[in-house]
Length: 216
Image (cartoon, rainbow, N blue to C red; front, side, top):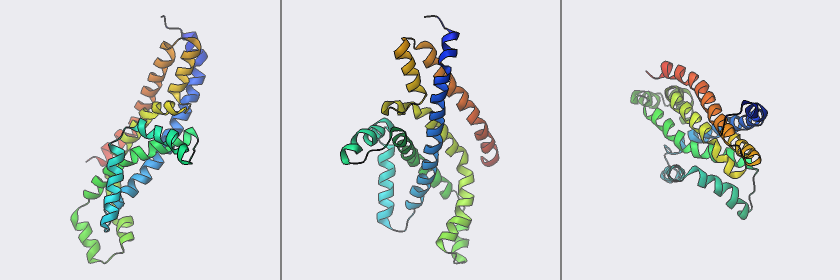
C-alpha cells in the first residue's frame, strides 16, 4: 500500500477533531488526578487509623488493576447499578481516578521530603493543622514533585486511546473510523502516532524547565 498525501489531507480535519477531544479529556482528567491524588495523600497521613487504611486500600486497588478494566467497569457495569454517565465524562473520571492513585504517591514522596525540622517548628509554634499544611508543608512539598506530576500527565495523554473502547471520539477512534470506511489504515493510524509524538514532545518542554528549576 502506497502513502497517499491527498488521503491524509482529506482526513486530517477529522483526526484533529479527535485530537481536540484527546487534549480536552487529558486536561480534565489531569485536574481530577491532581486534586484527588492530593486528597488521597493527605488521607494516608490522617491521624485516624481507619482513614489511613481506607485511603491506602483505594490507592493499591486502583494501581493494581488495569485502566481498561476500570473504564469498562465505569461504562458498562455502573449503568446496571443505576448510574449512567456520558462516555466522555466516564473517560475523564476513569483517567483521573487511575492517575490520582499514582500522583498520590508522588505527593507523599514530596511531603516526606520536607525536613523534619519544619514539622518540629510548626509544633513548637502550636500552629493549627490546616495552617501547617497550607502555609508550611505543601508549599515546600509540591514544587519538588512538579516534574513527576507532569510526567504522569503526559502518560495520561498517551493512554487516552483506551477511551476509544468506551466510544469516546478521540484520535484513535477517529482513525479507526476512517480506516473502516475506506479500508486504508496506513495513513490514519500513522498520523495518530505522529500527532501523539509531536504533542508529547511539545508538552515535555515545560517539564524540562520545571526539572531544571526544582530538580536540584
